[in-house]
Length: 115
Image 1: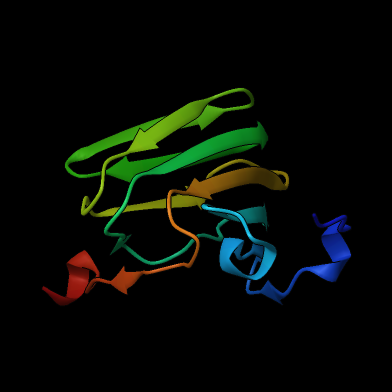
Image 2: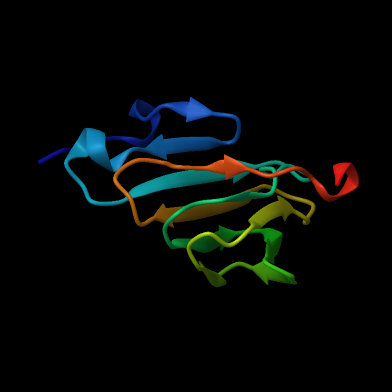
């Protein structure tokens, strides 16, 4: 059993990282706090990811589809599907991205301008 505070988790880029393997949990999560314009590169995971938008606005690309997601929005991203998000609003984006894996496994893809 673990009792943690958010500031005890590693922080990289724009996210606190909950690594399930370190906590005895079968899933991992990014707790995102992204400034306007911030977001990860296009990437894939070999497992399902679910993104919960807690506050703000994100433009999320999943495969060939792009949607604007606002507070309360939930996006289910299938395994091995290229995806990314960007904070497309004018304030902080707070998002929790649940990964169906005890460890993060991510493959970054070339962006469209370099293809």
